[in-house]
Length: 376
Ligand SMILES: *Cc1c(COP(=O)(O)O)cnc(C)c1O
Image (cartoon, rainbow, N blue to C red; front, side, top):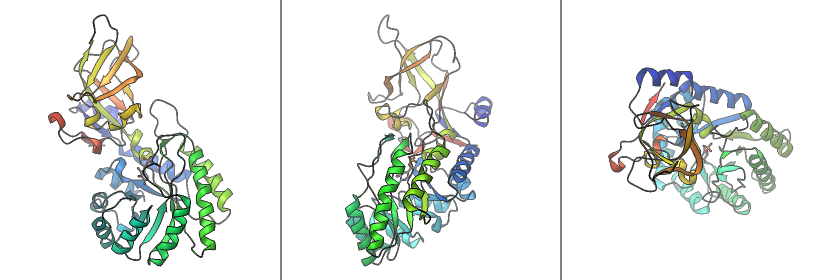
C-alpha cells in the first residue's frame, strides 16, 4: 500500500467496498518499464483498468494503448488519446467494430484466423495487421494460449494472404500468459517469431514488428522477478535471434502497470463459526467474486490482506463474499489465516488489487452496487 493510499483511507474512511488507486505508482511502473525496455513501445492493455485517470496519466507519459473492443477504443479517444496510438488487439472483433475503429483512424489490427483477416480486409481496407501466434505459457498463472493464437504454419500463410488482400502484413504477436513468473516463455516465443520472420522474408514479405504481449507480473504474496530481469532475458533473446537488426518491439502490459497501484478496501460483514468447537472461521467480506474479485476463480490470484490486528494471534479462515451464491467463496483451499480479534465492522484491505477488478464487478447482483473507485 502506498503512503498516499494509506493516508486517504485513514483520513476519508470511504464507504466500502472500493478501489483506491495511486496514479503516481502507475507512473512509476510505466517509467520503470520504459527504462528497462528503452527500445520498446508500450501499449497499455486497457482492460486491466480502463478508468479515465489511468488512461490520461499514461497518455501524458507517452504510452500507447491496446484496446479489446470498440468500447475500449472510445474510452481511449474520450480520454484524449489519438487514434495513431491505439492498437485493436483482440482477435475476436465484430465487423462493425472494425469499421468504426478504421473510421476513427485506427490502423493496427490483430488476427489469428483467415476469417478474421477477411473481416479486417473488408472493414479496414489497407490497414496494418499482425498475427497472434499460439505459444507456450509455462510459468504463468493465467495461460491465454488455448483461446487465442494461430499455429506457425497458418500464421505464415495468413500473413502472405494479408498482402493479397491489400492489407499491410506488419508483424507477429503472442501472449506468454498472465502473471508470468519468468522470462523463459517470452524468450522461447521470440525464437518462434524470428523463424517466421525469416520464412516470410524468403517469401517476399518483410515484417516490421514483434509484439511481446503482456504477462509481466504484480507482486501478490510470492516474490516476483523485477521488470529488469524480464528485460534482460528478452534483450538477450532478441539479440540472439535478430542480431543487429531487431524489428520494432511492442509490449502490452496490463497487470504490471496497475496491479500494485491499487488497494481494495472492504469491511467484514460477518466472522463466524459454522460448526461447534471448530477453529475454522468463515470471514465474509462485503466484496466477493461478483463484486470484482473474479480472479480468485480457482484461487488463481492469491491476494494479500491487511487487517487492523495483524501480528496478533490468528487462526484458519475461509474467506467469502457477501452474496447468496455458493460460488462466491474467495479462498477455501488456500490456507489463509486471519487474526482471532477480527469481527464484523472491521476494515480489511486487499493489497495489489489494481488490475482486473473494477470492470469485473457485476452491476447489481443481490443488489450490491459495482465497486466504487477513487483515483489519487
Ligand atoms: C490481457 C491482454 C494483455 C495484458 O495482459 P497482462 O497479463 O495483464 O499484462 C496484453 N495483450 C493482450 C492481447 C491481452 O489480451
